[in-house]
Each structure stands twice: as structure tokens, then as C-alpha cells.
Length: 409
Ligand code: ADP
Ligand code: ASP
Ligand code: MG
Image 1: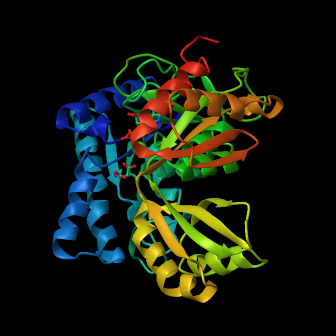
Image 2: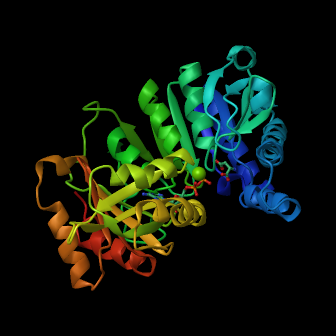
Image 3: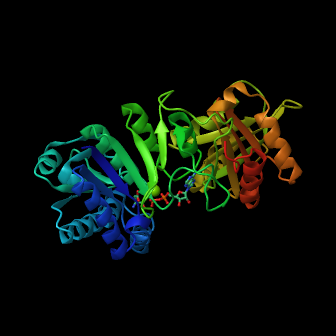
């Protein structure tokens, strides 16, 4: 007998028919004698609908009230799934995040889980119930409803698995595992049997939305056995996230390609080239709580240089304003330019460490397609480039092919 946390995403619970399908799957595990805690997302499209409703009333919705609204989507799914389980003669009980007591900090819309009260869930499991928990939400110390950021139900699942010491956390979604890249962009993408935790962390942070970044961080911290599977396929082993040398690893140099359309690029032109300039530009940006991702300072000429960096697209206008109003006059830069139609494309692989030449191959392949590289960033296990958004899909496809990711290893 095993103890599973099973998380079902929005598409998997997208209609009452699909919820009944999830109930049948869960019931099967339950009948086999396993203990199951199910985490559900809102029905697909529901969170977007709720956000749009809020924006019809308040242009910049109040963060606390926004959480009250968007958390309702998951609550609906929990009750429907519990009912569907009851119809199959399975004892089931729904919980909101607050009812479990998933305690978070008070950062509305992007809260972090601090602690989970296990008592209620344990008692129900021992009494033979399937417990159905609303993903994406919690409660802060003052009793305010909080949510964990888009895609946050993954994190609820992993956090519950860590707190309750489940044997495995299974993320059921609309693809049957982690692929070499998003199969919606590259139909030839292959499912990976395993992916290392480090690679998954990079892929999630570089834009692969298949797992929320925080869920991967959480899994690493508590060594949660984490698997991604399809809720539509009857069988299949999905993709297992591995830690160090625990399982046999696919020894590919590159294991995946991630992409991200969420960034914008800003360039400060004609900056005096002297010590402290990066601090003078990025200090006020950081003070405004704006995260900066890639940074480039060009080689100076005639005592002047250009300085570029990227921020999240939703911070673009705000950052431009800070630069134009506060920084440009202060440091005497010639101009501030920018664009939010860029995309970041990254190749990721733990095998890269010992292989020089990945970057140059990447640059050659992009050059052959006439794709201009605007920025470059590297780490031990990834190379990222910023390109014009309109070339993103082409870049992903040609790189996928050039690195033989469509071939079995
Ligand atoms: P859910 O609603 O179940 O949480 P998501 O839409 O958040 O599902 O995540 C699943 C989607 O992630 C897939 O439909 C796929 O398009 C996308 N995706 C992006 N990168 C990858 C990848 N490397 N492997 C698999 N799926 C990916
Ligand atoms: N429903 C939330 C969202 O759409 C959380 C989730 O699905 O994981 O982002
Ligand atoms: Mg998701």
C-alpha cells in the first residue's frame, strides 16, 4: 500500500465529464488500498475568467480581494470531485487551503507556504476518506485568504507531499510527461523518462510552465519523489524528476529547450563608462522591487558605453518611466530605448558542463536561419539567447533539430 498526492490541472478537470474521469482514476487507486490526497486546480479558463471579472471593476485590483476571488475556482473543483467520488461509493471530503490550514506569508497573489497542519487530513485518511484539497491557495496568520501565483496548484501538491511524507507526488496534466520542449511548438519533441532536478529547475525558471518553479524548488528542498503524468492516458510512467545519481540518467548533452515570452529589454545609451554606473542604473530599479534578469554592458568607446537588461514584461512601462524620469537625467545618459517584443530561448542540459561548443553551435544554427541574437546568458547547465519574439518558434524548432532532440538516445 502506498500513499500518493495526486494533482490534477485545469484541463484535467475542465468539465464535469472530465471530473468524473478523474474520480474514476482516483477511485481505482483507492480501491487498490492506496491512500490518496488529491489536489485540484480550477476548471480550465476559470482563473482567467475571474481575473477578468475583477479587472472590469477595478483596473488594478486590490491584491487581497483578488485572492478572495481567484481562490473560488479551486473551491468549486474540490466539491465537484468529492461529489463525483461519492457517486462511485468512495468516501471523500473537500478542503479549502484555509480549512486544511495551509499557512502562508501575507504576500497576496504570490504567497509562500510556511507550514501545513496535517491533523485533519491524517484523521480523514485513517478513516478511509479520499481527501480533496484546493490547490493554489492558503491562509495567512491574520486569516486572510492568499494565493500562490499562477500555476500554484503544483506547489500545493508538492508541499503536501513533503509535509505528509507521501511516497510520491504525481502531477497529472494534459501531456504525458516532461518533453524535450513544449510539444505544442515542436510536435517531434520526445518525452523524457527522467529529468534531473537541476535541469527541471532551470527549465521551469526559463519559462517551461509545465511545473511551477516553486514546486520544483520545494521538491528539491524536501527530496519529494515527483512525477509528471497524463490524466488522459490509462497507463504510462510519465517523467520522474531525479536527484543526483539516484536513477539511471539519460546522458544527453542537451535535454531540453525552454522559451519565455514574458520579458522586455531596456537599453540605456551613451552612459559614462566609469565605476558605479551599473549600480546607479539598477539600484533604483531594485528599490522599486523590479527583478532584473539578463544584463549586458557593452565595451565602451570614447568614455561612453551602452547598458542593457531585461525585466518581466509587465514591469516594462514602469521600468522605462523610472529610467527616463530618475536615472537618465541623473547620470547624463544619451537615451533610453527598449522593446517588449522579445523572447528568450534556452538550451538546458547537465551534460553541458563537460562539453564546450554548445554555445557556438547554438549561435551558428541561429545565424544560418538569419536570426539575430540580442543578448546572451550562460550558466553551468544552460545557454540562453534573447531574440525577436517573431523568430522564437523558428529558433526553438531549428535548435531542437540541430541538437538531435527528436532522436531517441
Ligand atoms: P495544468 O493545467 O495541468 O497545470 P499546464 O498548462 O500548466 O497544465 O502545463 C502543461 C503544459 O505545459 C502542456 O500542455 C505543454 O504545452 C506545456 N509545456 C511547456 N513545456 C513543456 C515541456 N518541456 N514538456 C511538457 N509540457 C510542456
Ligand atoms: N488555477 C490557477 C492558475 O490558473 C492555479 C493552477 O492552475 O495551478 O494559475
Ligand atoms: Mg500548471
